[in-house]
Length: 223
Ligand SMILES: *Cc1c(COP(=O)(O)O)cnc(C)c1O
Image (tube, rainbow, N blue to C red; front, side, top):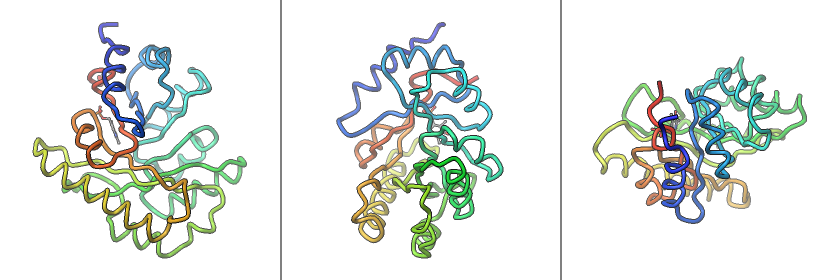
């Protein structure tokens, strides 16, 4: 394998301050590359497609914590709920309800993040800040015993403009503080701020990320 996964992994890990965890984004990369990172102690991996995640989960060590980071259709929820560690991309009440329903069926509590749409690109998914406020204010989530809302996730705009990326991440940070105070002040589990990818995870660290999602810098370009 031409790519130095182990060296790259350690370079990323060495640059993370305490309190920031790495989700190694392994989508489109073969199991051998995941195993190389696993051998170095990495346990949290992220995938964006249900079927690819299922195959990797079946083939790879069972103590891997799989995070789902892609767009999730409600009819696919039942396939990943039995084993997924966290679903980072909850962008509707309907999806949250379906995760709760499927998790109840298999006797689990599934940890989730609410995905925010802050980037200027219309192609990106996620809840607008107002939609997210409305979802939380409606309060139905409080009755859902089989999902735990652990924080917020976002993807900054795809741009070279570092100031814009920083603004968007700071908006997410401020919004986290707002909803934490308003809805989760007594809930220690609500603590995760998932932002930062290969090109912007340094800015993410400076804007309070607790979870960076890095793929290309570790595994190389996706084919
Ligand atoms: C692919 C992906 C990443 C990783 O992106 P890289 O630029 O390869 O580090 C992070 N988050 C999400 C939601 C992704 O889809």
